[in-house]
Length: 185
Image (cartoon, rainbow, N blue to C red):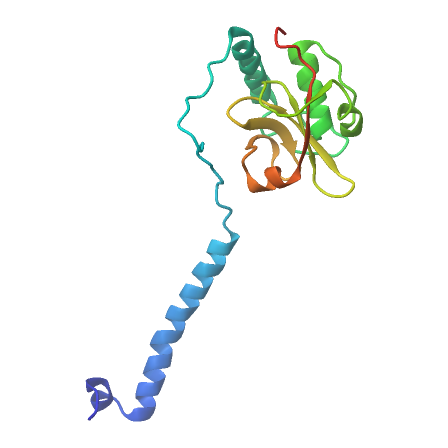
């Protein structure tokens, strides 16, 4: 018993017909799966509990607003190692510039020096805390905690941005938190 396709086409043509119609479909599937592998999913985590977010006191609300205004001034500035301007800035210079402009506090210039400035705290979460990461054996990175598990920083790949501390990369490389600002500042 023959299928209806083999009755219409001789055997060798049926074989070519199957290759011509199946191969492009397979190529499309392969390309789509490769493109999906290159896509970086946005990592978002919902809180485990249903507790509402804590209400910020007026000092912390003002501090957060000030940090966001300063962020808008630097947003999109490209990363440049050793840079200290809107033409290019590195993470420690960005933190230094924001603290000086926003709080009139002069921080050390390097991430290494900043990592011993202020008071070490066990948990981050107060707006203005410095958040430090060890991205490899010798490289350190710093940002400023804002609110809702987010921080401002000069990313080596995206420039000055806001990132999520829940992102698997940042969770994996988290090192320490330092508190420089008193709560009343």
